[in-house]
Structures are given as structure tokens and as C-alpha cells.
Image (tube, rainbow, N blue to C red):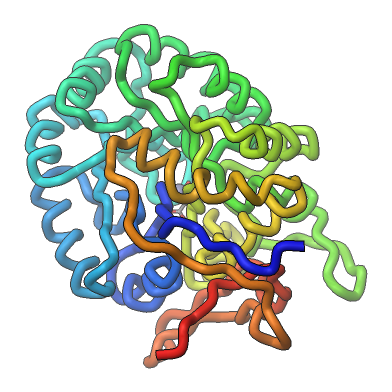
Length: 357
Ligand code: NCD
Ligand code: ZN
């Protein structure tokens, strides 16, 4: 049994760092582990153009260590133009994100027209200036269990056909349909994979069993797209185990105040950052492909985005004693923000080794 893993300093190609004061509370859980992270733009207020991006990047740089590199994105809307894209690219945007309006947290005011026309002009501008299109692939108005399949079947193939060579990432794949499309599509199409979609099914949200065996709703496993069936999870696990460079790490860590999740209309989003790399390692270990974790977390995403590989390494070890227990909450000094950690109280199979100072 391997007791130590040395990986290239990893990248995380999908994270929500939020704005202050949440940003300062949660960023460290990501920056302690990941050297670079693709920072999602569905903040409040959102990141819509070059000016927003510059302000938000400064906010992040102020709140994070010097060796952390935020990879910036903008949120596409019905009002985004090719000129907005070009300016955002010059300001440093590496990707633009489509949130179908209304399908998830912070998606309001996103895209509501998916056909040809203005959106295609925007996509062509992105392709021409070397920006990646990130897609939250869920169809508005379609029930959660098939919303991703519907978007994958009805929208994405047209986009791939209309704008050849556009780099497109299906974010947080959750269904066998999405996995199949990504596998079959040209090499310009890839997917991020979260630890939740590798480990959970809908039963872990809607039919959760606590340690006493009681069954009920678990809002802290709840994210969009919802984890689905055992078969869907199996296809996602198989995709990463195959070593295909089209599937790479993007943990979708998405913190919310716990009161906002334990609510009548609880927010979608899981704060998985404290457990994300260890969970990936556990899954790869279970699948007997720990040797593939290095590329999944440190190579495939960077190569897809055309970024240099990170220098340096990170070490994972099997925890001793209580070292691997996930804390229950992260709470800000004034207690205004308190976030429940994913897998709270569980013992991780791997932890990031902290070198003695
Ligand atoms: C994300 C969030 O909270 O911003 N929520 C989620 O359930 N994943 C948004 C997103 O990525 O869908
Ligand atoms: Zn997300």
C-alpha cells in the first residue's frame, strides 16, 4: 500500500471564492492546496467585463498568498458583445462562463437565448482571442434529473458545430450523457469533475442516512447539477480512471453561510475545498489508479487551457490520529460568516502534509 503521494502542484479549474467578507474566510482552504484556480464569476455583484475582473482580481490577490494564481473568468449574459470579450481577454480573462439564467446560484441575468445569433458572435470572438468557454450545462425549466442531459443533447452539439475549434468545458459533469458527449467530441471539448460527483448520488442528498441510521435531507451535499444515479457516478469514475486528458479537476467548492443552505429554499453549492484533493485521492485509490491523479490534478487542465505546468510539488500522506478529521465549520472572527465544510466530522483517507516551518 502506498503511504505517500507526491504530486505536481495542482490546479483547480472551477472554484467559487466569493467576495469579501466570505472571500477571506474560505480562500485559504483552496490556496493551501491548489497553486492556481479558475475563479467563477457568479459573484454578487457578478464579474461581467474587464473592469469588474480587475477589481475582483485585486480583491483576491489581497486576500491570498503571493504564490497563488487566480485564473479569471467573466460571466456571459445576453448583453455580452465581442468587444467585451476582447477587452476582458486583454485584462487577463482566460474563460467566459455560460450560466443559463436561473438554473443555479448566481446564474440570474445569465444567458437566456441559446440559439445562433449574438451568442455565436461572442463564441467566435472567444475562440479568436484564445478564451475558453465554460458551460453550466443545465436546461432551464427542465427537472433536475434530466436538465443536464437535455442541455447536452439539444444545445452543446450545435455550439460545437457552429464554432469549430472553440475550447469548451462542460463544467462539473454529473451524467452519463455528459460524459459520453465529452468523450465523443473533438479534443477541443473537455470536462471538469468534482469530488461530489465522483462520490455521491441523489440518495446522499434526498435519502441521506446519518450515523444513527436516520434518513432525511442533507442540504450540505446539495449542489447543482445534482449528483445522480449510481450509473452516472460510475461513468464519471470510469472516465477519470481511463486517464483521458479530457477530464480534469475542478472541485466546484461553493461556500454558502450554513443558514442559507438549511433554509426553505436552500442554496445549491457545497464547500468542499477542505476535503477536495483528499477525496480525489481516495477515489483514485479505490479505483486502483492513484498513478493517474497527478495528471488529473496537475497536467490535463493546464494543457487544455494552454498554461505552463506548475513548478513544485505537494505531498499527500495517510493521516495519523485526528489529523484527517474534517472540521465542521469555518467561522469568521466576527462570526458573521459560518460555513459548513463538506464531509464534516469524517476522517479523510489522505491529507496534505504540512512541512514543519
Ligand atoms: C454554485 C454556487 O454556489 O455558486 N453552486 C452549485 O451548486 N454548484 C454555482 C454552480 O457552479 O452551479
Ligand atoms: Zn460552480
